[in-house]
Amino acid sequence: MMLPSEQAITLRKMIAPALFVGAVSSLGMLKRRFQEDPFGENRIHFMQVAFGQIVRRPLAGTGPNAYVSTVGQYDALTAEGWPVHNTPLLAVGELGIVGAGILFTPIVLVTVHAWRAKNRHDTSGTYAKAYLASTPGIFIIAMTGWGMLNGEVLGFWFFVTAFVSVKLANRTTLGKCAGDDNHAIRTKTLQTVKVA
Image (cartoon, rainbow, N blue to C red; front, side, top):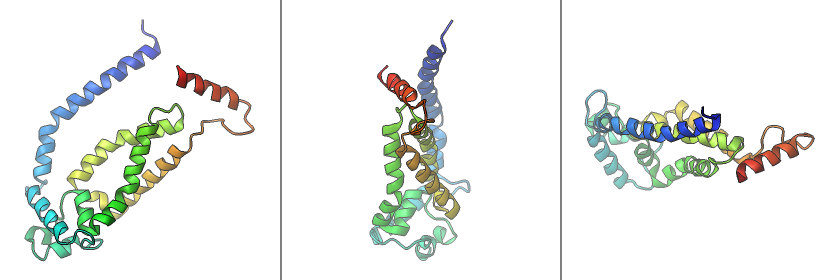
């Protein structure tokens, strides 16, 4: 008979191999997704056009929401309303390297902070794990589409990032108020867990 903690350890050991098998089995589909969109256009063409535009205006970009109209003047597929299928490249194309760097800095900083906080035994550790668990999916979506820069999606993405940032900075646990009699007990319990 296994103790609950032994079962949890066994489950944790199974998660990484399961994720690896899932990732390897989806590589072919992911490769196709990078090369073509649902309508059959060639993603490599969009990438080449985007890199060409970035080289033309590396610092300033085309301006917010002006990628399709600017690049569409010399590329027929983009003129039909198809921007590059890559969120970071589209951001660099529209905002320039500096603007895209400023745009994505909060997301990178919160991701790094979450990575450092993931092993905490308080609520910030829980939020860090949840944020990090969502990161691979968001990364795949961002690298294969432009929808993450859509107004509502971008706003929600930054709202979640800001919310998690606040939760990571707040290292309190339930009942950690100054007037709470259980404060010392809970703090001692957390310290015991961290040492063990």
